[in-house]
Amino acid sequence: MSGFTVLLGKELREAWHTKRLPMVVLLFVVLGLLSPLTARYLPEIMRAALGDQLTIPIPPAVVADAVAQVQKNLGQMGALAAIALAMGAVAGELDRGTAALVLAQPVSRPVFLGAKLVAIAIVLAVATIASIAIAWVYTALLFEPLPIAGWAALALLDWLALCAWMALTFLASAATASTTASAGLGFVAWIGVSIAAVVPTLDRLLPTGLAQPAYRVAAGLTDGLDAGRLATAVAGTLVVIAVAVGGAVMAFGRRELR
Image 1 (tube, rainbow, N blue to C red):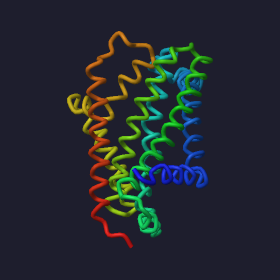
Image 2: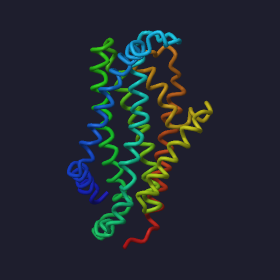
Image 3: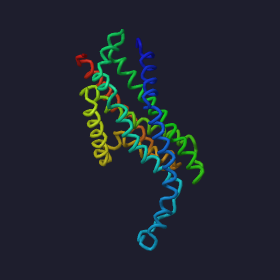
Image 4: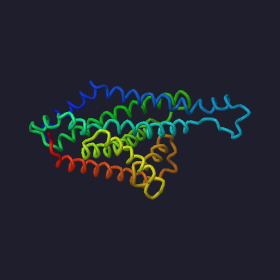
């Protein structure tokens, strides 16, 4: 692990100076702020706007709606942010020629990749925690306070899912050495997994399978929580991450640096 700490510090400093860290955190905070507001006031806005034209009754908003909105927004916009963070992680370094300079030092290729992966995971963790924290506060103000432990579990599971999308895009970045191609492949992987998750048996094994248990835990609906399904989804997501990272190490290990 020689040089890992140095490279990790370098990656985190770059994330700050290039505004990636503050911009992603700001995006996630906005999502956390708007989610409970949308859940609380959107039904009232629709009833006021449509009036007699509203043929389908809209039930009053409840606290579970706020949790669902948070989960939906983080699952969609958060995934896009994870893809954006990872798409140029390796390809950008190769394009600029800085990867060869760094690896000319006593640093192995797996350590080089590992520092980048951990740095992106830290950025996503900080952003996810900030988003869930502000969402919990506004949910408590607009509806009712829910147990913090459930929301901590929500943050952890959402972060794990985001790391899966990040790892798949990171694999594409290491394999193709093209920022555009890695972004496209990461997006296709996200859409493809989401489509595959329509099949319940597959959903239990994929990162998408974390969404429902995370929602139920945060909303306090633990009576119907399937612990086995949650454990399977966590294990499946970890396998996806491990395979993607292993593939990135293998692909980058065979790449000629210039």
